[in-house]
Image (cartoon, rainbow, N blue to C red; front, side, top):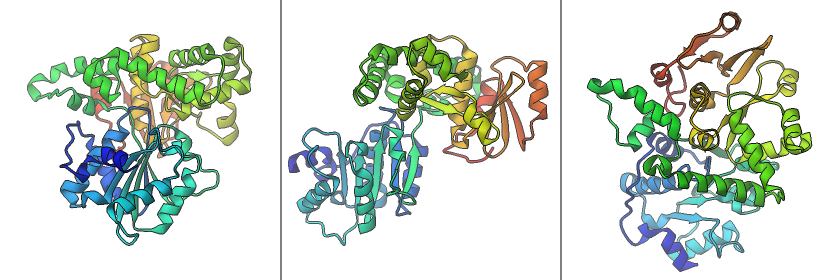
Amino acid sequence: MEQLFFRFNPWWEEKASYNFVERKTYLLQMEQSMKRKDIAILTGLRRIGKTTLMKLFIERLIKNHGIEPKRIFYISLDTYGLEHYSIMEIIDEYRKIHKLPFSEQIYLFLDEITYKENFQQELKNLYDLGNVKIYASSSASSILKDKKAHLTGREKIIEILPLTFEEYLIFKEIKLNKSNTHLLDRYFEDYMQTGGIPEYVLTGDIAYLVELLDDIIYKDIIAAHGIRDKKIIRDYFRLLMERAGKQVSLNKISKILGIGVDTARRYLSYFEDTYLIHPIERCGKLNERLKSPKKIYAGDIGIKNIYTGFRDKGAVFENLVYLKIKYKNPCYIYKNKIEVDFLTKDKILIEVKYNSELTDKQKKLFESVNADKKILIKNVKDFTSIPDGVRDLSF
């Protein structure tokens, strides 16, 4: 195990240096977490950059905070050869290598934590032992489903979303000075087509995005849940991408695919668990929220465009607005067959109309809703005026 550990932790023997593009907003959240004892859990789509963020933050710990390299341990728990070891056994072995007593604080970076069956209990034990700061990651939202409440009050969730438009420009090394702001719309349309998966933004290799989607669907859904009919899963996902930004009826889905409603509901949860989709509820009383169909948004626009092609720009634009305000837990308003896109938990009403206007009926409903603030988002300028959730918690 010692040789494997040294491969994963090159800073033990040489200078830590990574030539990655930084996502400063998430690194700031990780830095702020240093001041607290809680377990920082990075979660989000596969290949959204969780491992990269961990390594960049390790570099910061050494360079900016003067943390001794041997007190920083990174391991990917899905690595072949580690399947028979518990997290505690792996950490004990790491301490032995560097002769680290339990009294000495260590920083643990546990990648793909859900590969260990009893990870909640083990994380709780590590937390309770003290003098350990833990950063963990998972590509499945099942990490949030802690049935025995081992981590309740002990964890801080940091959800890593696809690149924002501002981050997209940084990754593409595009600087828009005042003299060329006329290019903003063109670059934004490129962003609408590409989406925000970091490696795909950097390379433009469509095969990479297709491979990523195959990995998620086959490894994290079909294989993980023992699903025999692979075609149904693919057809189901195609239907969801076609319906992104719209209400999705499980009854209709089940009839189209020839499966039961309960099966349709279960499969939908698998797409949600892997961050391929994000559902939102209808606003209203509990019975209205439970009975009404949910609206579905794609986890990444680039992935959606693989299935649908780059069309219906209004739906793509609305999806990007949702990803930008996701942290505000929006619901949608639906009354007399008229819809308003979002009402956030802090009473901000938002309607998205890409290069278009409200109809008279939409305007009437929009004006009638009780909200502290009302925003109409019609173009790139309106979109960029909305602060990113990780930067600013009020707008």
